[in-house]
Picture 1: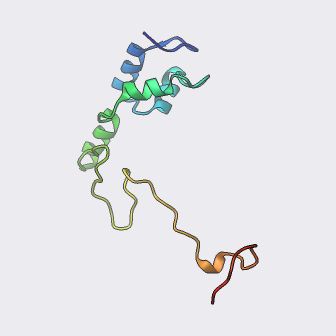
Picture 2: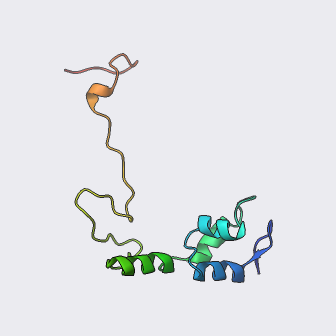
Picture 3: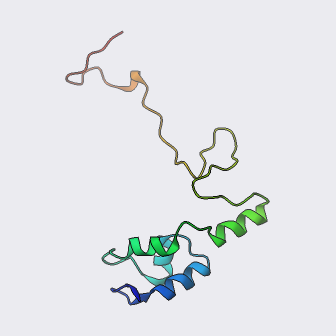
Length: 109
C-alpha cells in the first residue's frame, strides 16, 4: 500500500529504510523523499516507525558501553545534563532583565 502518494513510496519501502537504520520521519525523508512534499503521509510514517527501539541508536549504545534508551524512560545521565526523554526547558528570565517600563507592569522592590 502506498504511504506517500507524491513520490510513490510504499509501506514496504518505509519498513526497509527503518530496518536499515532510519529511526525518524526526517531520516525516512532523506532516504526516500516521503513526507517532503505535501506532508500528509508524515503521521502514517510515524505510525509505521512505531515506538520500538531504533537499531542505529541501540548499536551506538552497545559500542559505547551504555544500555539502550527505552522510549519514555529516563536513562542515566551526567548531573545537570538533559535526558533525551525530557527536552531541556529554558530557565525563566531573571526579574532584573524585564524592563520596568512595560505597560501594566507594576514594579515591586
